[in-house]
Image (cartoon, rainbow, N blue to C red; front, side, top):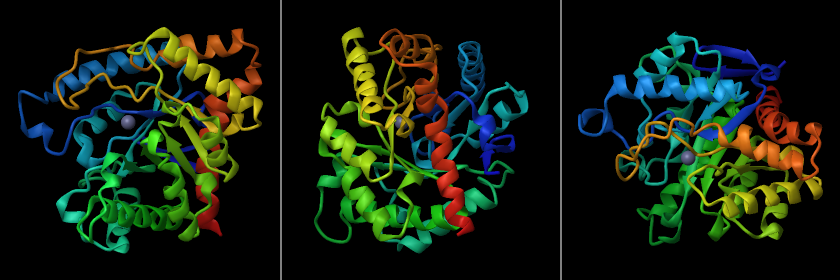
Length: 323
Ligand SMILES: [Zn+2]
């Protein structure tokens, strides 16, 4: 049986249950915890416990937290949430966000992989908390391609490092992508070149796209699609477009390769201190799933998106390590 590492230790993959595939306990940037006007740990802790309780009441059993160190991951907070024993599994991430830190800018992929493997196998920042998944982020910076110091060259080295760490440790990779630029395609090309099973890869923020052709090409290569931007911050008609897109993927035979989430956080410090949204993790269970059911999807089909799709990425990743 495949194990998944959570902040409270390993669980069986079958115990993930209803899983939100792309969320953030905290989100901001590296060292935000050193700026008192931006980060307050007690506040972050209290808000997270409330948001997790609301998600749990809505039926959520597991949350994938895709906050890397350079995106404002707070390991002490993760420790406190683990100790609180909320009843919701939380998988935390290693990896690199879209603005590759200067200390990684010219590292070769194996050095980057070594950093990720340390957080997966030994623990994060001297704690017993181990990362269960690798996060990458490719966005606008990918367009900047001039020489070895360019963002694009650094992003590509990070992707190769992530692929090598994923194979060695048997953990999946989940990617923030700029869907408008179809960045899932060059990412999968690199992962394929590194010999990764693409079933262990989630191409996230894919429901920002309106192009069913692009999405079925990604799914057709075996990868998982992150439909991870739903929520009350969007107009109802936009959420409905996103729900219809998920239905279309089910109709195309890829329902078990679509994962749902919000890209939400109760402690949002990205760009600015945003108003707290405590129900940042309830739109999918409370609105998205009922919409899908009302529009003809069976509970079995919906479980493909809320349960089996994420499980499939962990199983494919673990199989690579065993191979
Ligand atoms: Zn995110």
